[in-house]
Length: 267
Image 1 (cartoon, rainbow, N blue to C red):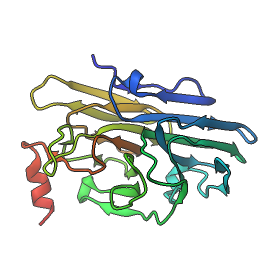
Image 2: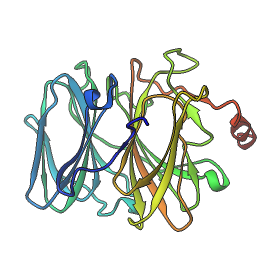
Image 3: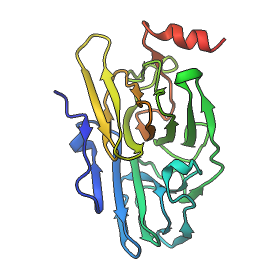
Image 4: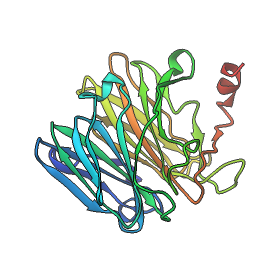
């Protein structure tokens, strides 16, 4: 079985620390902190750029000598308020001091020093899909925002009983403009938190085919293949996506057996 489902390591401090080495791939890194008021998280970015996402709560965030003061408006991720996010370039140092209990995601990928530290703003809620495939997107740092060297970051709210990242699609070939190679992580949350969801990661040739029950706080790695997920009736699903590869563009192809759904709903 592939090691694609990562459980949090405890409930406080840095509970996820997914690196390129631990994921056995080349681009995406993902960390997650649970901080109590007054606690601090700080890291040097090294050769990687970083997008900090305040998933929940408030914190004072700075990058080197640039102070962004207290950030954060939503105390629960399921309020669907746009998150507070900060970009930090490679060869920088960032710091976050919690002013309330907070959950801080650390999204990383190779940096080239082309962009300065900044607050990421103008994040709007976008509806996508139809029927039981409806979900709601906060495109934090997708390619239309020229703010990063490698990182693509977005968050998705999937209503109870609905599917997401569906029809199944893949972005595992460096074949632009038809497709781009992008590794991806999914950080999952469930509401109520005792719920569960499902995610399948599979290739068309059957070499990889893993179906996982995800709990609140789990991370799923998508090194290749299709990766749909679903939330049972009664439980809303949230996930934060981090993608990166050799080109900062999101080009994918739907599974040929299921593309008819996309074609039908696009009319």
